Length: 452
View 1 (tube, rainbow, N blue to C red):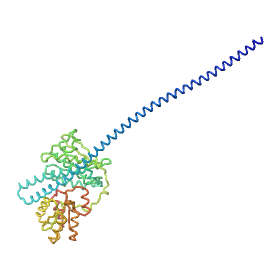
View 2 (cartoon, one colour):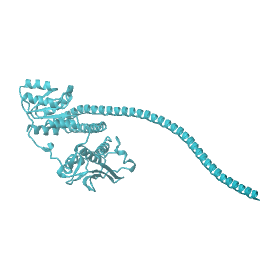
View 3 (cartoon, rainbow, N blue to C red):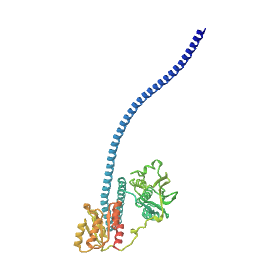
View 4 (cartoon, rainbow, N blue to C red):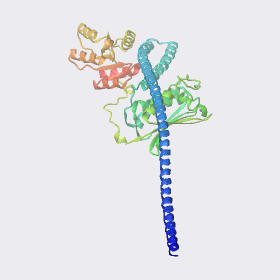
């Protein structure tokens, strides 16, 4: 009995130990399984990392090849851009040079016509001379327009922005265009106001000149109105006409070069450069140009500018309206002319002699000094071309003549150079400048002023 009880206790103990071992085994198996899962996950991540590394290497290689391709393309574009810029610069330089050279014979032709006008008395001859003069004026306008476009393209024309009073500018434009509208039997109303704007004086004047000329050219009846008024934080200048109007589809095209409409019966069509210059100048100055037009009812061009205070407007040291001044005659005045262009020199000498002047023509500083020694007397005035042969300047020629005479002889510069640099150089020397082609009335008034 006792042995059976002991056997039963032994069995129960073995069962408890077996149960305990099962729990331990289960715990160990669970731990092993978790460890295996982690290893499998780590291996999977390792494989994924290797795959991603291969993809990154492939993409990096492709990106590097793409970058090399872009660099090669950029190098090609850069070379092409440099070539295009060089070609454009060459084109602009050639155009500026050619235009300057063309203005020389044009100047000679207009001066010759002026001299001829004073010699001819018959009405028929006068009409032919007027017709030839109008043709030369058109050619002059074309050359000036081409010169302005070339200088803009070459970056040689930079604005000098300052405060500009509109009233004096509008009055000058009125005096300039009233004879034109009268000849075409049109009306011209210019409504001014005591306002000032920020702009470049030369460019703004040219913009308004072109807008007025364009409006007058294409208006057959009625007239043209120009006015200015504040609009919000801007000053708006408007030029309106009663012309044929411009179709909506053509309103952008007219601002491109050589786009022109049908001129009035009493005028000739322009060259299609006026509005192109308006757009180019306005863009450089930051002014907005707008167009409103209706077929059969006319057009209105609006120019929006930044306002300025009238107190900021510069006081001009001397503003003389040469054409309105009346001075004494030029009879007997001794003029030393330094001009390297033979045709221009001959034409200007003929014009001056027609006014009663005694003219000594020379081509260089050395020639002028030699001529002064031969004459044995001082001239009453010196007229010199800005650009003489062999890089010589008319400014230095005038200076040498004055030094030779030990006199501050009245002098003026004539030139076909329309650059700001040329104007500033002459201004620094205190000399008046006449731009070629020379207007005889302006020449006579300025010469009379200098001699007075």
